[in-house]
Image (cartoon, rainbow, N blue to C red; front, top):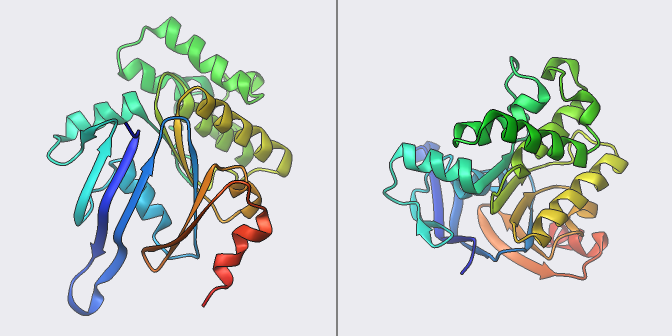
Length: 240
């Protein structure tokens, strides 16, 4: 059973002359333990694909299935529970709560799902330590650098027993050393059975993936499997 199935997904914004077709009949299946990168030019629909996969918005048509469960028809509370328990999301703008410390931000989803305070904080500290952030656990987001905030957001996404990791440009605020650390953490999660979908412009980052899919004008136009070099991954951008 796939962790994620996107079946004939289309997304349309606006109507008439202002209509924008962000996605057009996209199909994507992601198996447990696999790492899929999504590439494409700006405006190709990459981020829309990710928000739909994470149940943060609904498609205009098509079906989202997570671990065998169709999202269609789920009440808002049930979708929120699914996200807390199953889906870890890394946003481009981090989405950290300013009034909580780094470890409180990381452990909050576990607490909301009923885990005890001590156990959730221990899990949060462990996730931060895996990214070299144990020294900033007690600091607030505005006391952290952009790279530190990004790594805290990634720790929050992988903490607990989530089975699907969705990341939008996870290395955008990081130098090459910390970007490699993040990628190794994503790969470690995949080795534990997590399915990962990562949107990126970075061919070097995408070369870590098991499979790379390419979007253009809302359509899936190509895909490649490992081994793929960064140069090979740039090639679809050059196609007319």
